[in-house]
Image (tube, rainbow, N blue to C red; front, top):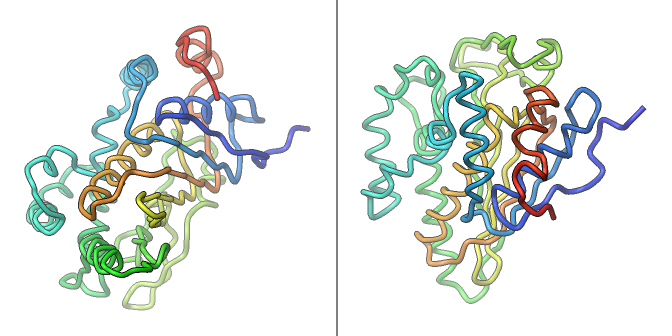
Length: 280
């Protein structure tokens, strides 16, 4: 029997190639899933048009939301284009957050919302993690020897929302439940939740570059994966610009990663001969 634990790193010179290699590698695994996967993207600011068109087409065929919508939950690129600073972006997003959460898919919040308005023990308490992170980076970069690693935001939930119900589209509901984390709310009531799947995002100073690292408990590589990669990459680029560094490597580690369409569809849309994209 083939191992269900990843034995190597999936890598690519750009975002599209790294995501494609991850999909093709996991598609060959038992039940199209692997535990402990690592994807490394050398240049997360670059995409391949062939791969991007292929995933956009497949998402439309499957009735899923598009790549841009998924990416926007992690980093609101259009809003950021009209904001000069992280402070302005965070303030404008918080002003819109109540409206954003009225959409069904956002009723428990968005990743970016948790970065700039992390919920506290009461409804009126929140923390702007992202602005604080940028401030710490700027302060450290003023020093001769800046610390390289103490820059992270948590996306995990403190348990203030109602427990979620596993979506049957995710496959085996028992397996999906196993990725949830128990929390205790202010009243002491334990909650089991499957959201958010990304639990941690951190960045690291490496001389003139800013690397990024994200941890997912669970990831659906087709429905959400490409959009997740893109949203994190855009956030990494924005943070780099805010503190005057170059964009470094993006690494994504996942507890369990799934290819959530059939092997035939993966082959049709993303196999080497269908895309003519070189694999690393």
